[in-house]
Image 1 (tube, rainbow, N blue to C red):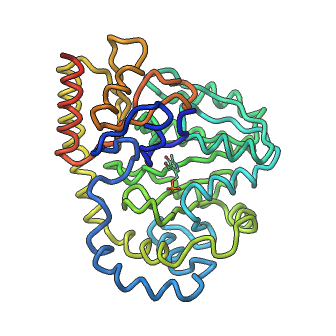
Image 2 (image 1 turned 120 degrees about the horizontal axis):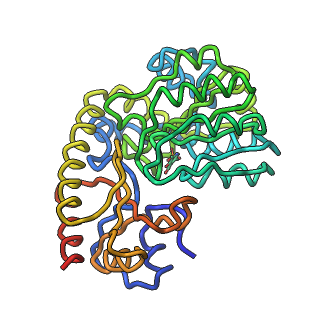
Length: 354
Ligand SMILES: Cc1ncc(COP(=O)(O)O)c(C=O)c1O
């Protein structure tokens, strides 16, 4: 049984019965390799006092700031204990409904929907992962909701905003919810904005995470944007105080960090170009990612398991893709890490070739 998520590499070592080397580099978690912003690190010693009182159950200050950032209203924003909590709550909101997941995609949508008794089907994109709205629109008449992950985890591909806009409009006409998970949108040079649609559309739900760009997954912080009626229905399902005070403080600091976000995007882009040149030279195939992770495979092998084992024995931990429908282990996923760590990855991939 392979672990269902990246991070915590010892689970992958244990499940594959590979002895974990003393030093490993974790390429399986898609976090900002530059770490949390300096301002957050500096303010952290002040945070201790926050744990002696209950957090604001309405996350009022952060909600206000997020609404202003997205040019929307506070009634259209709900802060959650990570994007993961909001996915679970949206699943419960869709109790017993007919849901389609555009695959490959983050596995939690299916978990959340199945545990809420939903009927789950897939719309699986062909490799290359281009989104053609037409076949999906045809399915909408028989669906209550569609999950779309863009930029996509695991491929890193960002779907064309025009196609997404078409889906948003058609879903509304057919009273089908369209849930767009944009957990990685802030890694894009040009972030898509569906704020205009959000202000009128009752069927659009946007999910966001603060844990990726700001490298704070241990704190748990995300938010969703939707019509006020959807927000209040989801809010009723949410446990009181589910977002802790430390996360709220971190969120308020992080969303002001535009310069940090811009510097991260630039850094990621430079590393991605460097890695892609290497992959081409050494005959590896990769996905056309626009964010901080990508898929990779050795086209000279039908089975990527030997490459996975080789990397892990050499202390490089990728994310397996066995539990992504549409990939089924045919690729490995890697985060873009620091320059030295990416160099080490290239060194090991070059040694695999020889
Ligand atoms: C696409 C996507 N959405 C949401 C999440 C959940 O993020 P978090 O709960 O850390 O905010 C993840 C985490 O890997 C993800 O990949």
